[in-house]
Image (cartoon, rainbow, N blue to C red; front, top):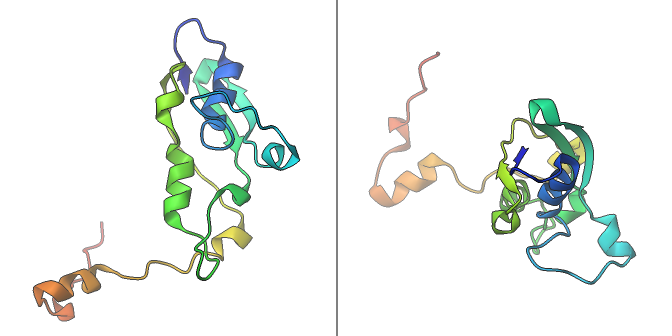
Length: 134
């Protein structure tokens, strides 16, 4: 992550992380115990190499209302965040992401695959070929 000229690295890192948790592009006046419990945490910065590490509580990721399973759309929303409120950020890149094993077990995989998408085209699933090894 690189802050725009004139912005402090740590403050910008905290803002960058907060945008997908309890931060917003407008002032939010609610700061109760629950809100504080789901704040993003910046735990490492290296301004010279433009690196930062931050963590989100898994409680931030919405669950499927019917079965309680984790949803990839929530993970993507958290990782991409609200870029409209990041006027202090020149650019940000995601190089790595980690999920606790217990959280990963909440994913049950996609409910369809490429073969399911072929059915409306009347394509036979036997047409699917293994990709050649690289």
